[in-house]
Image 1 (tube, each protein chain N blue to C red):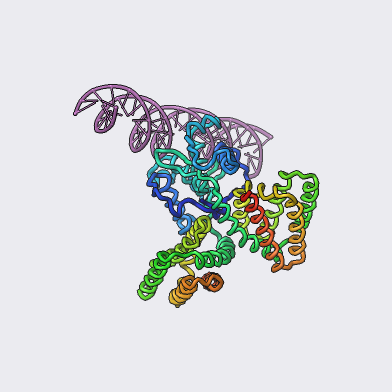
Image 2 (cartoon, each protein chain N blue to C red):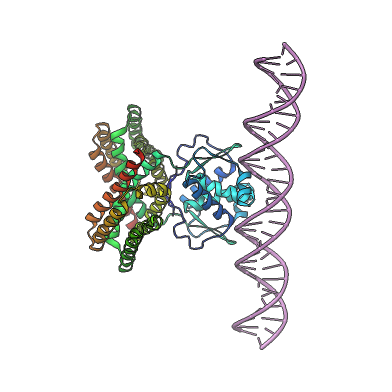
Length: 225
Length: 225
DNA sequence: CATGGGGAAATTGTATACACATATCCTATA
DNA sequence: TATAGGATATGTGTATACAATTTCCCCATG
């Protein structure tokens, strides 16, 4: 299991080479459950599926291995590890702490432009919450938190959080399926925005931790059903 | 810049294939300053240096790129990014928070065996502090903190912290060069150990944060000289 | 019928060859 | 002399070929 500071967040040259295409596709396929944990991936099959040769495919697998999503067993193949429920819990435990840090930094360092961005994102979220468009809301949730991390001016932290968000995509989706959760989420975002705008680092940190706690709690509530 | 949860920490099969050899060598070379930031790495030269073909070398470069230590520019080459001073500061900011979390978890979950391990590590540290063997002390410092992370039973957290320690190796070495620092470090380790042993999570967290704060502070003091 | 051995098939590890893009440098011309 | 243009060289992106190892199946033997 691997949570790093990947260079992906702001890869200026969105390289459209085969390796990156395959890497991103495979990563999403694993995170979305297309390849459950334990699945055996053979290079030959994947080559045919993606229509590429073994070279770029293997390079993508190497990256997935470093990320901890697959394990390459010598002379055997790559087996999918994926994100276990334990991993989700563990990552949320970490995220609880770091969300507080990110919010605190943002409250101290946010620029007017970033604040405007944040406000517009929240307003747009409200629009899509009212339209019940869960996918759009999820995307805007990612954007909201990414702007906060960007405002914190701590590049490794932003990368890590972006990674977390990516890894927890399925979990966040589940959490949002709690009845009434989107509306509450929006409300929490508004409060957090206000705290950051006012420069109250302690309040922002506290609100962010509470927010993540609720996301996590809603997730576990659904798991019990 | 990339801080992840790499699968390396407890890679059960210590794969001795060329890719991993090259990856680890190159990573250490970059972290140790052999290849400063901005260095242009050409595959051909690296192939000759390591005596391998381009295939495993490229795979290693892909992993270094994901880690954020190099940037692969299409049709141009790989340029070393390394760990900047800003990165060190940013990572310590994150580490401050997570060290607290790790200590808290350890205080709650440590097993008797792990506690014994921790005690022995501290005793051994004392031995080498008295012998002024900085490298051994550094190694035992890594071990001390890794046991704490292991005791926390949070695999992603342990991986991340291991990554941090790796990335900050040079910085930690500098910090330890402060006169009298090793002795103080040992004292702080003993106090933290006692707090964890007594199961006092709050105290352990507090002590761990203080500890990291001092490491960081000593580092900056030396940078100013 | 169970078990052990041998060989073929499959799969990864590595090396090399080819394709393509880019930078460089030399030359020709204004 | 300065500049434009093209040939060449360098280096990465991709594909394929070869080597080594493992797995699995089948057959022979106890």
